[in-house]
Length: 216
Image (cartoon, rainbow, N blue to C red):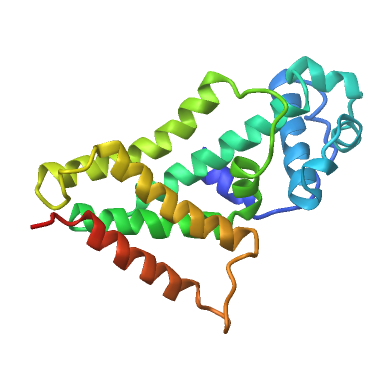
């Protein structure tokens, strides 16, 4: 499933009308989501409408509401795709120690944001009219627990300081990497020359490493 999402993430073409789209409910549901994704990637959230989705899929606008409550519900499903992809990036991060894994996860987070900026903006910048479903919140929380678990293992192994609460450490790390990633995605990470992102990341990670190591 994640591999399929990754392939879709790179494209911006609209979903084509196909005979299979109008038929089986599962096909129609998938075609509607495909069309919404393509419209969002090309035009942003303002470009996603029932009329445009219906035209791309070849169904009536009212058909969309058989499968999704409203446009917000559709966008929340796209948001879930983004979190599934982010989780895969984090899970693929490796390292011989907890500290190395934390830094690897930080780089993976930054790479996800810059390689899939459309999803990142949907996940963290867009203001939804409705609160997300519990399953969406759980997916978001799960991404954070992956980092928490690595921090916890580092504390237990004596690699990471134990004089600060586990979640304070976890949230502090997430805030650091989320901050630089958001600046890069939004185009607000100023550079005097091209390609300085890595140097900024190195500086942040150096500070994070000093903060995480046991003191005294």
